[in-house]
Image 1 (cartoon, rainbow, N blue to C red):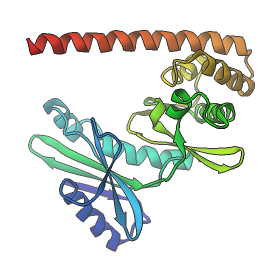
Image 2 (cartoon, rainbow, N blue to C red):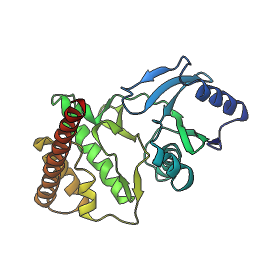
Image 3 (cartoon, one colour):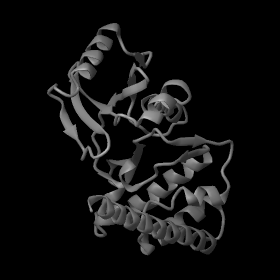
Image 4 (tube, rainbow, N blue to C red):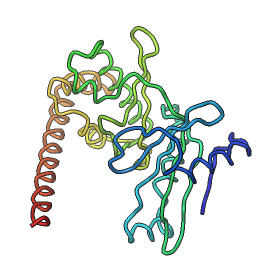
Length: 257
């Protein structure tokens, strides 16, 4: 078993966190999200809410890989959160990660972070076109993405539900990344890599136009070049996604027979 904490966590709190993890399945934590792949629960720790994310038990080959060759998703989430904060990029404060290791390798892993209240995710901007202050939020989010790329952060799970958005004043918003276990860090990112990193966010052409306009302003490249490339990548990604989804349905139908 492995247990690693943020250096600011007291010895007393460590024991409380360990107790929460050990009673994760039976404890009184409140389930957060849909829990289709991994399960997140909110617990109270010294009067404050914390998130504990329990990662799905890996298949045999990954059990061995995470034990001997690769860092677990929980460890990566913890370490990547620390890197983001050092780069002044928003993410809920990391607290700890825990690994349950037995033969033949990793069984379960948990990532503990502070629970953050927020107003919306990027998904609301897609699903609610008339969301209040829509274009302003979208432009500020795009600037946030530009800053990510300027700092060499390639967020591989850059999808609509993985950016929390918090309103801090009448016209200003802050952005926080979650689901952190898949990232790459670069000295610099070229335009191809930057725009590829945005292709999963929205299929809506009108949103891509606004994002292209804002990104071009900061990147100092003509807006039409950004839009053409980003829209092409978005369409290609959507087509591949739909093909993959159709194939999965066909395979499930074959298995049922």
